[in-house]
Amino acid sequence: MGLKEMQAGVRAQLTETSEKMGDRAKVMEANIKECNKDLLTLKNTMKTQTGMAYKQSQRKAMMLIKKKKLYETQYNNLTNMQFNICLLYTSDAADERSSVDLGGRRIIKKKKKNKR
Image 1 (spheres, rainbow, N blue to C red):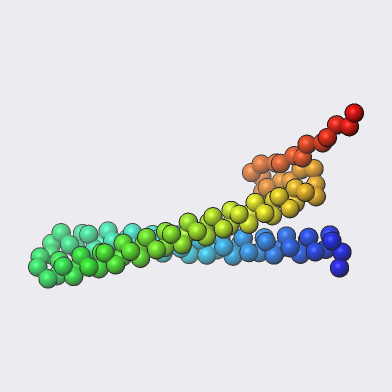
Image 2 (image 1 turned 135 degrees about the vertical axis):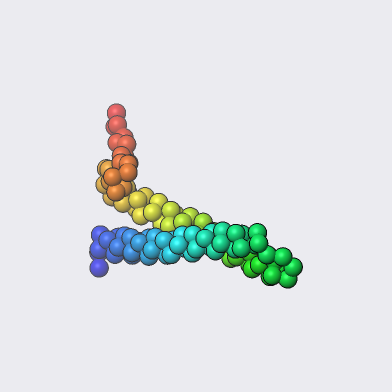
């Protein structure tokens, strides 16, 4: 197996990993939105409650807030890892070519050294 084939295999793995992370990030975004929706519903029901029912709803709200914070932390960590993988992929590809198209976002051009 040559160097070019190994690099192509590594790039394919990085792309696949990044895509899986993107899918997982979408799931986490949905979980965060669900927590926000549940918190809003709970907030509206707490306005009419008193006594023990209010205390129980308050405990539920605290659990939802902790759950939401956990999801947000996981989401941030995952997107940071995905960003690092994208950087690794593009830096590896940039080593091979004079310019790399990053999905229409930007183009990195390697500077050519002038020999004098």
